[in-house]
Image 1: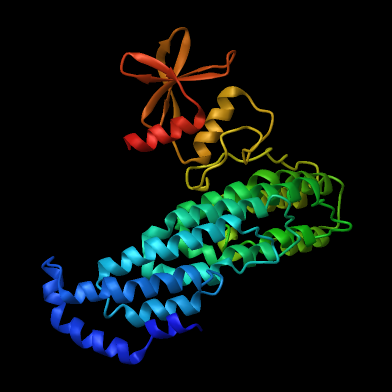
Image 2: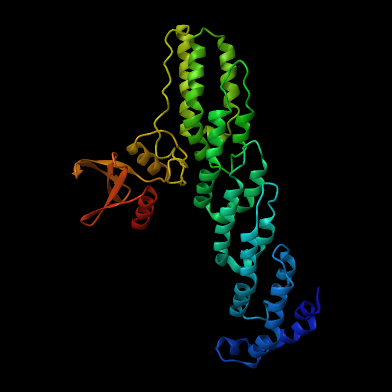
Length: 386
């Protein structure tokens, strides 16, 4: 520690100012330029600024935190805030902008989070930058690598549930979906459940609604179809029952409790019961997927483009809009009997819209006009009017 920082932290000098400050705080609060404030501005603050700007690096927060906290009983709150905004926040911002996160380096929270108690909401722009950096680090990540969870865990409590759910839905769930579609094979004769374990590890970080919706859309349709083909082939029903119980035991309780998952396991039981009663001759074929209620649909956004969407598949224009509405928890309903320019009219949350499938254009009613809008703009306008 250099002489200047030693001076600013000197117990003797601080005691003098503590005593003087305790007798002059009322003078300071009245807005007059007291001798005490002049002493702080001319003798103390320049030393503090110099120490923070020239001798401290954000990756080592402890020294600066001790410095700030040792003087906060002397320096008025407004001065402290100005000092942090001028000397600390910009340095942390530059450090985050230069940060190149990897899944093996999750240390950023160690030198960012301790400042929350001092700067609070002023740090929100920094968190937005960090969020973008973390999303970039996940682009080449595969769910078999558990390090992503350690990278993200420190940020869960800071972003709030809705922001966190959106981050997971945009950056984690598409990766988990790829595992279900491309790496998990439903094979009763030789079942490899390792890919499923990778996904289950996200229980608690991904919400139970998100995981349940993922399984209901991209696991259970194939799982039920395999079960159906097995049941009509006159199998050993004890073996089938053990297979069913084995699969069910892999799911966390909070996911099993979700209706979207429970419906599929119940359908399996009905198929198995029918197979036993009819010797496999009258087994109901499972649906491709069950309809989803509002309670099944996870809260959290998806990217507006079809390529980046959580449900990026070849679907019609109306279905694309409907699914985007579902992903953002917005009601999308027809308005029977209403037409505009030869097109049917729909309600999109608090907006009235038309869909031109030929031109791939959505128009929203604004007064007497119908204005083209993107899906993302529709959601923003709906939220603005809510």
